[in-house]
Length: 101
Image (cartoon, rainbow, N blue to C red; front, side, top):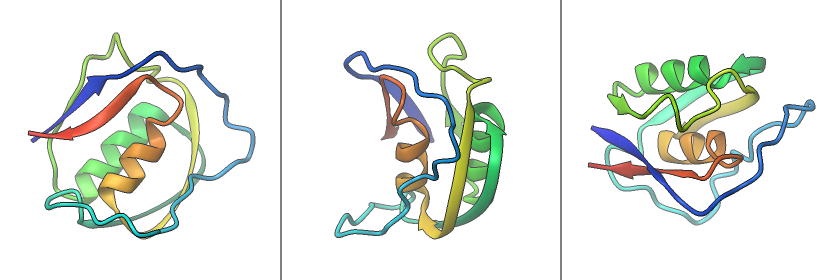
């Protein structure tokens, strides 16, 4: 099970045609956050993006709807990207982070 934990305050950003930074880089994600996901969308509510990503990775996600801007529009372009990276990028504009429990 994954949880979302509160971090330091951050500003909310609107989706302006930008895509998630889904480059693999040198970060190695521990299981189950290493599961690859593929998702492409130019305008998707954060709620729907989280649902689609976790369903594809066969993960359960727990969060407080009061802490997330669930109607915030995001752009996603992920090709066999580790789910941890995709979730981190989706939450980049919030003050929250992915935590594996």
